[in-house]
Length: 141
View 1 (cartoon, rainbow, N blue to C red):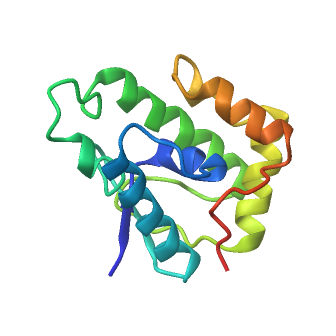
View 2 (view 1 turned 135 degrees about the horizontal axis):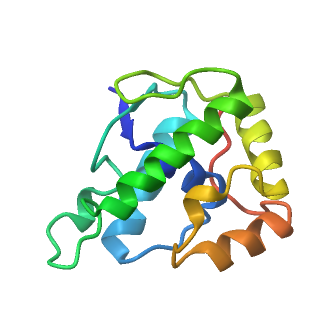
């Protein structure tokens, strides 16, 4: 199988340590991280992805909002600069330990955080980065 991700969720994965909107959301996120950690391929999508799935049934789901689409655009551009490749929907993006480390360094430095503007998780993610990404679940072999 392949994990479907929207571009800004690549940033979210960097700081994920088991917190989320609901119990179902966290359970689903944990499964996705496990799949990525075992080397399952990642395909970039436009719009809701595998991480969004538990949220889609809620009335207040933000996954289709224009602000989230803009987050994806910003994240794709900045991630592409760090990795030296085109990050576009429909394409695959192999995750390796080195790529995750490179993205975390850029995240920690603030150079790939434009997509995080206005996100309710921004302060938590900033604290996680400041603490060196301790206990984050994405390892990417």
